[in-house]
Length: 297
Image 1 (cartoon, helix red, strand yellow):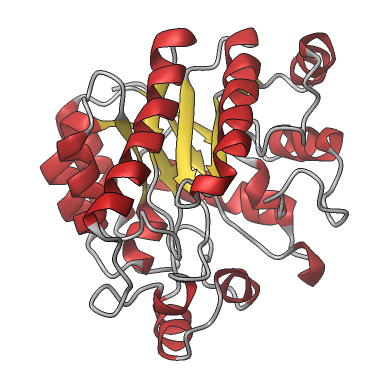
Image 2 (cartoon, rainbow, N blue to C red; image 1 turned 60 degrees about the horizontal axis):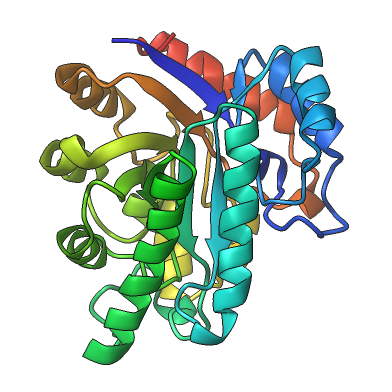
């Protein structure tokens, strides 16, 4: 088994490219390398330079490889489709320019679903027509990435969007061809949604092409679900803790990957609130060291 561990700009609080609170892309690359990682994700397109020569210089300077990138856009909103397409093509072009393989699709937070994050039985559901159009938008984004750019495309469930709960993820997998759409499996978001990450992995490991490693504090999770706390406020309350300190069973995660002969990148993602002055370098280092102690190298 050859598994490589990377990190992502969200571990430095980078969620949106134009957020004035963001650190510089150079700072993120430098700290990622200092923490001992050899790979990093692109982050939201536009955060890192879209000029391939400029980004290549920064990656080489820090001994980093580009792993993949995320299209975090409102697939649930038909009026936003032009923006989704733009992000799909720009992200895919950036990945292809640097030989990165993983294009990750995430339905961003919807006001209709935000109050019921972690509450599968209460969450509003799309009707048949809305779901069909939603599914088709995701499938078209996946087709573009897979067929036009030669990338491996994975759907990523995310708290407070319409692709949040296990039943929704499995429905999408049943309805979209696995030739164009795999799974980028996020351990923390699956726990946030109220489901068992290890059980899902055992059932669907053949469809999982890429992993996001995230842990979740069970006490914070219970509180924010009970209080219907918004996703970003929950991040500010520390719902995503250092790996090994939450409710995700990472030794079991490793065993499922080992048993399946999984190879490739697994990326640490510890979403944090940059206004709270997190110890991003220290946390990144602790997460890498924890993974090493349980057998990831």
